Image (cartoon, rainbow, N blue to C red; front, side, top):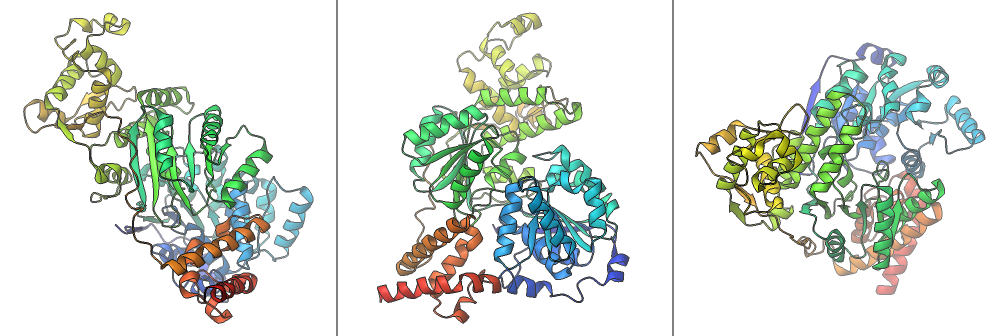
Length: 628
């Protein structure tokens, strides 16, 4: 499968065309292709980028949903520079804004951010430069942008473009809803005629519609690139001995950087201490740490290799480290939307990466309690329960996980060949008879109860709830006592995943029979399931692939990576901001010895040629001389 499977564009209306033509944007400035080459050092747009850029250049509003690592930032940075004037970028995190500003400055772009981490004097000086027209791209948090004072000040300037990053935050159906994003639905009215781009990597159909309705009154160009990240191997295992399972997984990923997500602040610190005791360079990250400790830990992870960060979801947006080789979920995430967003932090360089999830019945129950306790109304509760159910169906999928994941986002795909089920399929057991017992239990108990209660009935457990309901008198009571509770709960979940049963739409967790389940009960078809096992995490079968470049180039690549790390540490920026791995690989293969040769390397624009050309050329020349 291609990394970007398809682009679907829906243009609704002709937004802002009159005001665009009146102002003549883009005519007197560098074209987008020139910006791409001269500023960013790229010869061509990636699939999906140009259509988004063209819409913004034409003055139209855009919602772009593009997978992590596909280059969303360029989709607004390129038109911002091609249009001239000032572009305002809305971003949810200070760290994310600072990283992007640093990267743009290294590329020779006048970019700045005004945020709460800077002193008032620094922010005043930056605003002076913005007002003087010296800044081309200004990054702001939503709560700072949507103040009357800032809106009034910006209206006096030549604002040509507004971009909203992590746009799913504006939707209450998004994976990371942030109430402070709510005010952004007024931004189009405040800046009539200014094209607005909303960008995210995570948005199902209801979230996308919510964003378009709120921000653009239902009128926008909508681009949805493929959600697939084929370089990430997907895996999920029931919890048995989670510590042993994760240690076994990490044994296959030594000397690699990765993230271990867990549910609570306490557990992140426990995981970090445990892994450190086992010889890993592990650190904790959560919102309860002192700000300076959080900053130090994030900088360590971003600038150095072979660091494992044990984190809550507070460690998320803005983490753009390209060589994260794995993401582990030690606990069940909240939904498939959140899961997709979190595993998207792995493999941004396009090289093989691994996402492994461990889950248990306790995790599912805890997530349900979180949803029940959350404010937001019955509709939100119902939707969140549906999303949790979709995640559980993914975890219990009897066939290709990627098919289940992409189907959730509305994409069809063939079996991927790069998930645990495709790579090492479990033996499928015929379980039609047991499935019919579950269906009988669902029907006889009134289609009102979840998997745990159904297991009680099948096992013949006279609990208080069973006693009060009188279900100990049913013919199905106790007919499954020859099997374990785990067996019946697993069977029930896999029947939901297979479409024989479904969670009741009322959001209370009751399981009901589907038409497909009715047909099975009538003797049409059969049900196969994966037996609940303690399958060990498998070694990534792709790591044995032949290296893409020859041994001499591999050695030079390691030299160049060491130089990049040295420069990144000195500048206190992530290593990828200096040069991406792809750029270093291109250097190692081409072995440029002149400034003109270096300019042909992937990702080398004019500013980076000026800043880093001499030092990298010297390192390459020294390597060639020593190995001649």
